[in-house]
Image 1 (cartoon, rainbow, N blue to C red):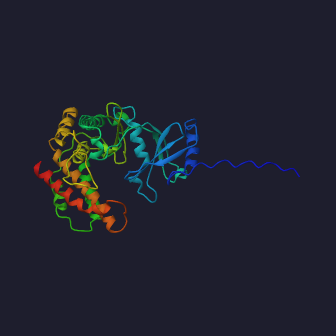
Image 2: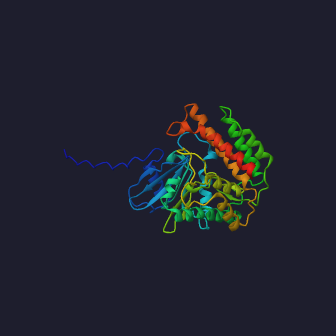
Image 3: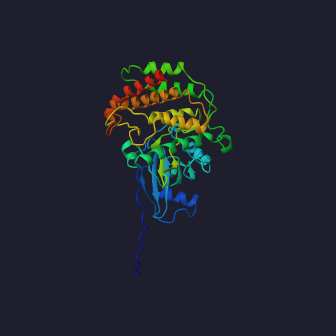
Amino acid sequence: MEVRPMTPAPASPPAGPRGLDLGRLRVHLDASRPGLVAGELSGRLIEGGRSNLTYVITDGSLRWVVRRPPLGHVLATAHDMRREHRVIRALHGTAVPVPEPLLLCEDESVLGAPFYVMEYVEGVPYRTADQLASLGPDRTRRAVLGLVDTLVDLHAVDPAAVGLGDFGRPEGFLDRQLRRWGKQLAASRGRDLPGIDELHGALGRALPASPAPTVVHGDFRLDNVLIGGPDDSIRAVLDWEMSTLGDPLTDLGLLVMYSADLGLTDSPVSTTSGAPGHPSPAELIERYAARSGRDTTAIAWYTAFAWFKLAVILEGIHYRFTLGQTVGAGFDRIGELVPVFIEHGLNTLQEG
């Protein structure tokens, strides 16, 4: 009897992190973008994401980014990959720096959820004042002012001209936002929070008239952009999951809030204001107003709304922690921050 040598089985692709099946992904990439991937794929999860999952994949030569919803049951409207991909595709080629989107996959048999792939952009997301301080005062100032300039560029984009004319419902935007976050607060009430209802009510009574609607990022801050290059420029704006058409000053108010001093030390929620050279909130507002031509006299309301929104978000985290649904370092101290955010919101409204 002839004995034939056994043909070795093909090597299995390396296992990727949870939520990223590298074998299925490679098959899909080869079918959708032939020639894009040249070698065996490997991948890793980018830590620090707050909602959707972000992975870096490589074939040993080139790198790309994969973005997908969290594992398990999620609300489709809160983790809409098609929506994120759409706004990035629309803005690519404008003055707003975004990664080039390469493909959108809505076939859940590939990774268990819709996902999209975009180019990998080199850069650093500065999350704390200590990290930013490593740049030195001059570079820090240039980077943060560049963040304001990028926001102005975003708000200068004509939504209809880039195919985003139906990207949201600008009419009644602020009223809907206030009601939405009021409902979020009601859903996570587990204790008495002095001042929170006063802040919510005061915001409702002083609702400003919105300027003409623009594309709104929804979470515009320093650690949602990549900074790099010899000029410390904004290389890419990331995390578009909350983007829509609405009031542009909500983006500015959030940026101003994140640039304010919380007055705390060793806090699990930090702003970048303590970095030497960091422009003051007033300077950020002035630069935005001068470059955009928009009236920012009502910015106190938008900043107070940002304080309120973050207070609600933090209270939700605290509530889940008390129920044993959230674990990890720092979550046990989130609850003590909520009154600080409420106080800042009330003071901002009162001081104007």
